[in-house]
Image (tube, rainbow, N blue to C red):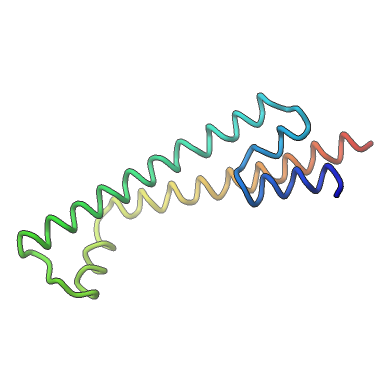
Length: 110
């Protein structure tokens, strides 16, 4: 397997930025890893907070214990828009990481 293909697959399938380590571009790789990890952690934190909020609503009797009511409770509020934003940021970083490691691989080739 070519080194450039291996790097692209590592960044695309495992974690953004790891493919840069194949070409010893450690600083760029770490920058992608950190820039992806921050919104990922914020997304997980937001999801857990939203889940806890819904659990409290169920315990207090504000939300019925059925799938439709829980789903409606999860999908309401401005915090869902924030979680969507984190998701789009992560997707953008992932795509840029894969494209950049592809560029680095092509440049190293020639």
